[in-house]
Amino acid sequence: MHIPDNYLSPVTCAVMGAAMVPVWRKSIIKVKTEVSKVRIPMLGVGAAFSFLLMMFNIPLPGGTTGHAVGGTLLAILLGPYSACISITVALFIQALLFGDGGILSFGANCFNMAFVLPFAGYLIYKLIKDNIKSEKGEYLGIAFGSYMGINLAALLAAIEFGIQPLLFHDAAGQALYCPYSLSISVPAMVIPHLLVAGFAEAAFTIAIVTFVKKVSPGTIYEGAREKNRALYGLIALLVCLTPLGLLATGTAWGEWGLEDIRDVITEGEVLTFVPKGMSEGFRFDAIMPDYAISGLPEIASYLLSAAAGVSILIILFKVISSLKKDKLN
Picture 1: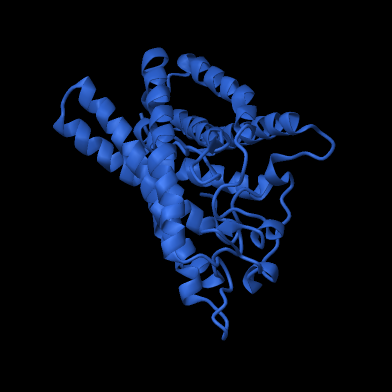
Picture 2: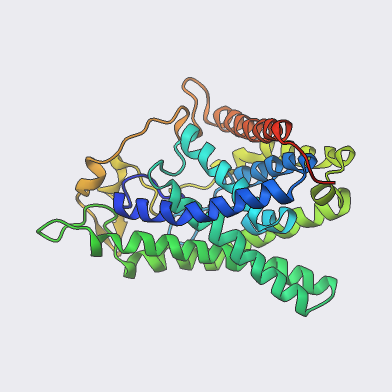
């Protein structure tokens, strides 16, 4: 679901980035005014959870791969505005350091995963929880909210892909950016998420919310520092388990590299060309592309990338916390 650069036109990227500006502004204001200094580091913990969940690739129908995002999870634990900030920062680190998601398409990726996913998932969760006032209702809300949240995000990504050949093509009608129409992109993205990825998102969300409620119920909302060890322990465990994400073979749909796009088989046919906007588009060299470190085995690189990403996110929000003047009780 991480849209790379040059799959979307610069115009599309600009529109999606502009759409995120008021969301980011509102989220920053909410965090500044409603999140106490002692709770700010929890946004780093949330960002770390999202970052790690996105490293656990799972095989999807059609030979592609996908991953959970943790958007509804963070919205439940931190609130949707804090979740938006946490996931935005996680996506930024992924794009900047690891080339996972594009720089120009950053706004589109944030719109799908940092805005629509957590806000829609949280709205559905609250709707069910408030109408079925029991523990069963709460968990139904968690499951259905997280399942629908990631599927809505996948649908939006599919639409963003699918409108490219319709709006941006050369005089001969050949696509300049993503070459696959809505009739291909929507089922290719949505069906695997409905069948597999949505359930993975729900499973991760239920498991982590249950864990937090049992071992550290006051940590997220009250910032009880003495109870943070369990959360950091879970993060450390997830870091150690991230190489499991390497077991899924194949590439996520719509994330093929320039060297692969020509040979992608869709509906039994090979594309046979590289869209001009892709071959001549924006280039950015990430520090550790695809979570790989030169000279190290794949597993070691993945582990170190996970540890580095998590450390950066947690330290960053701790620094932000130290700079915040707390006016909240």
